[in-house]
Amino acid sequence: MREWQVQRRQRTRQLIELGGLVVKAGLVELTEDDRAILLGAFLAVAAKLQGEEREQAITLWKRKGKRAFENGR
Image (cartoon, rainbow, N blue to C red; front, top):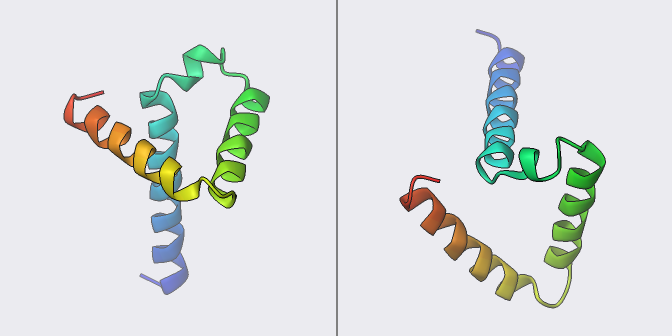
């Protein structure tokens, strides 16, 4: 298999997994599948990660995410 094919498959898998996290978090239903709301929320998260509270946010979100995975959410 050519290198570009391998990279494309890896990228496709990554996108599918990230989409799965959006569904797993319940964001599709909570936003009534409104892509503008989802993008706005992601932009707010990105802004927070660029700010002074980055480390605190990462610590909090990582803890919550690990708990959700452990609880089968």
